Figure 1 (cartoon, helix red, strand yellow):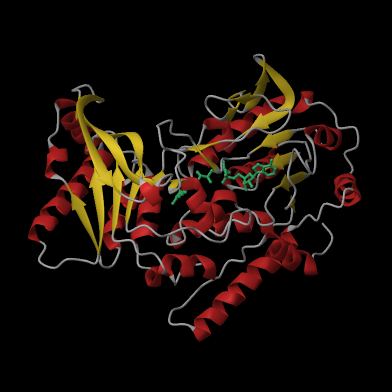
Figure 2 (figure 1 turned 90 degrees about the vertical axis):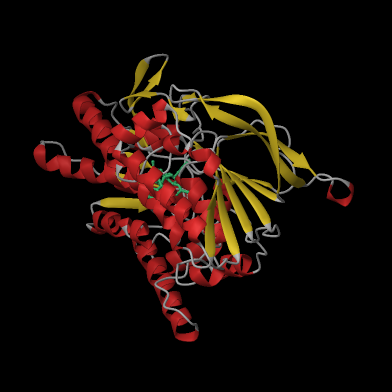
Length: 463
Ligand SMILES: Cc1cc2nc3c(=O)[nH]c(=O)nc-3n(C[C@H](O)[C@H](O)[C@H](O)COP(=O)(O)OP(=O)(O)OC[C@H]3O[C@@H](n4cnc5c(N)ncnc54)[C@H](O)[C@@H]3O)c2cc1C
């Protein structure tokens, strides 16, 4: 079995598949491929560095991989280094767990201006993604973040936090230097709908208040609820908790006696309509954002009021969702950014392509927490096990065959042993930074792909 993607969905699928052998008479060998030299997908390259508890989920996935019954082939891009045809020759089934790494689009005028960014690109930068530039232009004092989900919160929190308060995390030096040079004073988060319709989760929202020397600023006007909001607050505990959190901040704001040096403003009922361009030597650059003021429509939605408001800012981040990428030869739904599937079985013209499956974000769309990918994997592997006696038989299923193929193509793949070495190296860098710096650091990430590959392959035993 080949699983493409070593994010949580891929590792959970491998784990469930491996354990299912005990319950049946079938023996599998499972290979996990990833285009990155290191495993764990968005846990490494999406989850914010100041979320060590969430990053800690890696420990559970690490245990699965450390059992030794699942092989890892990192630094292998499926579609480039190895094709679907190759995989079919060597495996009876292929499971795509390729997730998402790109931003969904936001089609408003001015989105292409200099200073207009996708949140996913910024996340990749601060999480030390090997394929993104090392420098990020943090030059704006006033910044807008468009979106009302957890990624918008992450981006706004990282932008507004003082860099020294990020130093204890695994951020690479270039990210610390970049954040430390930021002149930011005001970060504005804008949501289209009301406080009772946000897509945040309570824990992530509450965390905003933990940033030192950052005031949260709200507008009382946004807190006039309609019947649908009242109903949502009454019937949904998460909504109730979040609205209470926001309402408490509103009270605290009125009682505040000292001002912080940075502010995080939260605006609701603001629909972005245009990113405004500067004039003179600021032509081509972001100068602000125009919003239409929205109002609650009584039915859980919003409608425009015809009132337009301009906010000055010199950088805009759109955090309006991630979007999956297609893999060559695999049917892709361009509208939803997912592999076409039913319960994880990949479909072509409504028919299951034998031996082809999908799981995680690329199966369901880029929403939900890491834990949800376990449910995805259970469903997908359940389907595979139902089909197991009818899978197409691989022409050359020898375990060595794929190694020979990758070597013959000069692909510098990394393995689980290689990851252990890189992991140890990053922890050692953390110890060195702790010894010479002001705070304790558990790890410092290695960013350049060549360096990750070099460190991993230096000790790599055979797979
Ligand atoms: C910014 C951000 C912050 C988040 N924070 C949290 C949080 O705090 N808590 C939480 O529970 N969840 C969080 N999530 C959600 C969580 O990251 C996802 O639920 C989860 O990672 C989805 O898992 P996945 O395995 O489907 O995809 P991914 O994690 O995206 O993994 C997909 C893997 O497939 C690989 N891949 C893709 N294409 C190919 C190819 N062609 N060849 C080889 N390999 C390929 C990728 O390299 C990647 O490693 C966050 C998500 C984002 C974007």
